[in-house]
View 1: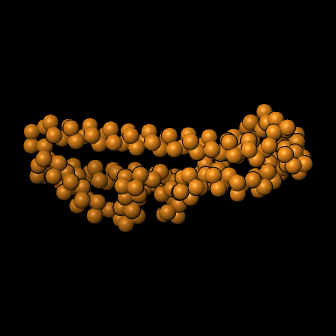
View 2: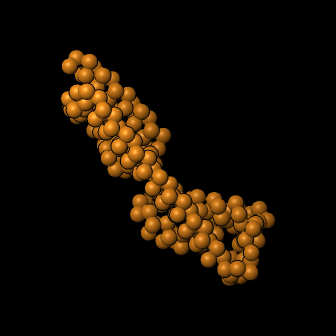
Length: 184
């Protein structure tokens, strides 16, 4: 470990927040290379980078100064990437499991095909009645499986605003679909 990094770590452990800021500046490119290459999503990569440096800060007191700091930091980054990829995989599996369950439910009911067709028609019609931002947010969330921070980045809004937009869009779709299918 370089003397500069050793001194910075000692200052961080002594309670100097500016020293940790310098540590982040010195090592952020190394972490970015690992995270961005694996995730290929800028917003998710930025979030994960923050998590990596939070873990570094939290566990810095357990770092052995005789070890290579870069190797230690990169191992934390790779571990966080693995956890995120596992989380995404579990989400995709749950989504596929739900889809299969839903298709079985539709197939088991009498007149399931006509009901499913009516629902699809109502959904398409009701989605067209939404504003362009709401339609885009729904597409990003449910067709591209992006999370709120990633959608927020694309729509240039806050994640909280995106969550609220999605809630309102789902409510509007529910009301519209119920109205259309009750009259058919």
